[in-house]
Length: 325
Ligand code: FPP
Ligand code: MG
Ligand code: MG
Image (tube, rainbow, N blue to C red; front, side, top):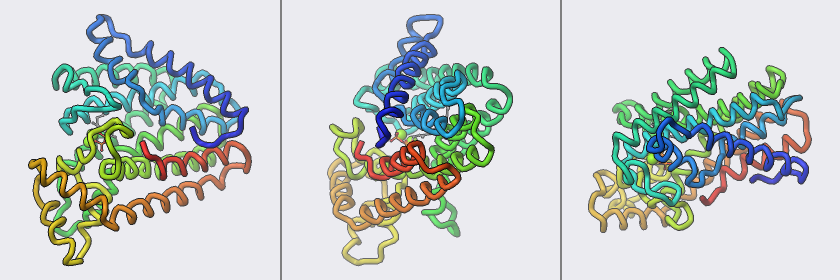
């Protein structure tokens, strides 16, 4: 949790517990097999980053405890977890949140259909929130998918690889996190100005969240992150530190650039590239960029009254930029 005052923390913890119950309920299918597959990742211990943001943003409105706020928190987490089932198939990932991925434990078909099942559940709940929420959910889904597709398309010869990458990130992660903050403010009855400020804040914090995730792919060990380090690197998925290292013209980087220029299927070469990246200034440069984004996000919060809620949202942006897991 970000730094929040004790009273607010107590409220958030209580509401998160309630959302946890709702999530377990919405993972239930008609048959035990479906329930088991859907519960698998949902209960593997996610950070519940998106529901927490819904709740925090809701504090900026007059009715933060509204039923719709809780429903919206479930919607965004169900959508997120659905997308992870699909993502782990595309990335051929074996480990997520310290547990086997659904594709590793069962197979790709089960993983894809379980993602669809959870997205269906999320859509059912969104219908309870009314037509505006349905439209926002649909637009968010479109952006998520477009971001994910764009990731598989290499930037054109005239395109800046970093700009292309940031567009991918805005789509695949910024979109749903922006919607989380927007829903929270909307369903707590905040003014249109505050709803828009929180949407914009969520968009920036969301991209920063993915960028820090991509930094962790290089910087972390699997015992702290619960993932296999260097997964993106091995798959050739461009990330901020890699793109920044690739911009280097230093002859000392020749070996690293050579390694980054081809698929890293060889274990020794993969380990070598990971080691070189961990020592490279691009890693620090990437971290500095993410810190700058946190500052940018916090500037959007000037639309909110100063106080405990704004402070908590500021702290949330800082936590995102400096997280280690
Ligand atoms: C994780 O990125 C992936 C996403 C944030 C979005 C994935 C979106 C889709 C698969 C579109 C389909 C969506 C639905 C709702 C069914 P990553 O692979 O960089 O991060 P990781 O390290 O957590 O795997
Ligand atoms: Mg992945
Ligand atoms: Mg991916």
